[in-house]
Length: 85
Image 1 (spheres, rainbow, N blue to C red):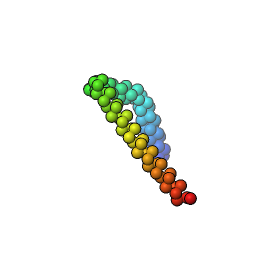
Image 2 (image 1 turned 90 degrees about the vertical axis):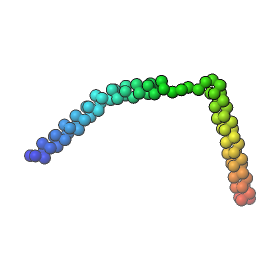
Image 3 (image 1 turned 135 degrees about the vertical axis):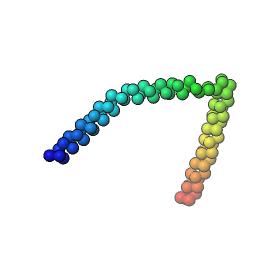
Image 4 (image 1 turned 180 degrees about the horizontal axis):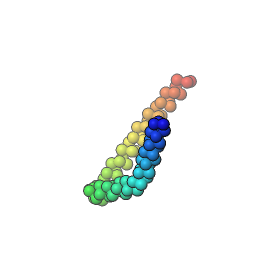
């Protein structure tokens, strides 16, 4: 008899936790967005000239890495063709 009371209490406790989770879900989501907005207010955004400079550096790095990957790929392809002949 004691086991059935314990399992019923455990089920009630579980369902109580589930209900509490869904009740507080909207509050937690709203709090996350409020915190995100507060952090975005602290951000120091770059000036237009800095943004263009950073973008050009990233673009140059991407082109350089593309060339490096192309050279490695072409070299590996030539090596495979040399070996399989």
